[in-house]
Amino acid sequence: MPRRAFSLVELLVVIGVIAILMAILLPALGRARATALRANCLSHMDSSSKAITMYGLDYDGSIPQFGASTYEASFTNGGNPRRYYDQSIYWPRVVKTYLGERELEPSQLCPASSTFRMAFRNGDYLAYLDLFPEDYDISSSYRLSHALLSSPEAWRPNADGKQSVFLRAVRAHEILFTAEKGLLVETVNFHAPDTEDRQVSIFTARGRELDFTGVFVDGHAEIAQYEELTPPLTTNGVPHTAPIVSTPDGARGSDKRPDYMP
Image (cartoon, rainbow, N blue to C red; front, top):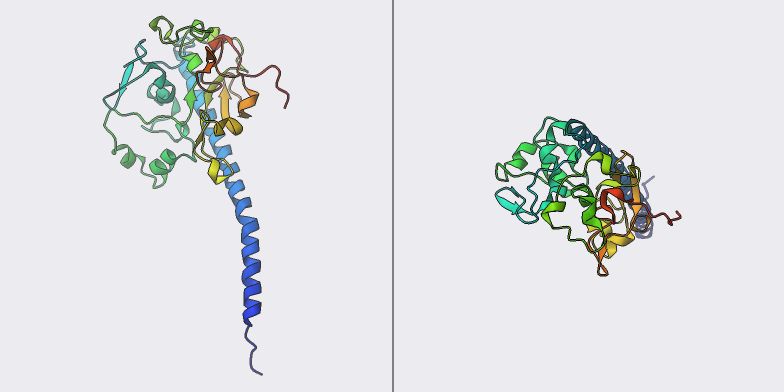
C-alpha cells in the first residue's frame, strides 16, 4: 500500500504550530537567561564589595582612592587625564590584589556587559588587554558611590563638591547607615529581560523606570527601582546624577527613601 504524503494544508498547520510554540518559548528562554545573568552579576558585585572591604581593613577603613585631590586631571589612564570622580569606575586599580591574581578579574565586570563578552568569550583575556596601552585600566561595570569619594560636607545643599578640600576618601567611621548607604551600583541595565531595555543607563529618563542592581556598605545586595532610593543631590533644582552615585549628606546620609512603601 503506497504511503500517503502530507498535504500542503497539513504542512502549513505543522509550520503554524511550530511558529506558535517558538513565539511562546523564546521570550521565556530570554527571561530565564536574563535572570541567570542577573544572579551571576550579583555574585560579581558581592566579590567586588568584599574586595573593597578587605582593602579598607588594610588602609584604616578607607574607601579605595588613588587620584590627586584636584577635580580636573586627578589621574591618568592610558596617558589620558581623568577627573577625580572617574575613580568611581577605575577603583579596581588599587583593589586588584583583593579581587584575584589576574590583571583583569571577571568579578569587576557584569557578565552581560560587552566588555566581559569581548574579554572572556575566548578564554584569553590577555589578548583583549593587548588592544590597550600598557598603563590602561579597564573600567568596572560597577560604579563606586561618589559620596564615598569625598567629604560629607561636599554633599550639603549648594556646596561646591569640586573644591579640593572636599576631595578625599571617606573612612568607615563616617558612614552612619551602612545598610542604607550604597557602595556600588550597576548604572547600565545590561541584563534587562526586554531586549530594548538592555544597555539603558540609569542617568536617562528611561533608566528611571527600570530596576538595577546595587550593593550596600554592609555587604547586602539589592535589585532596586529608582523610586525606592533617595533622589540624587539637587543644586538650584537641578539633579546632579543618579541615586546612590551622589546623594544628599554624602556618607552621613541614607540612600533609602524613608517614605517608600513596596
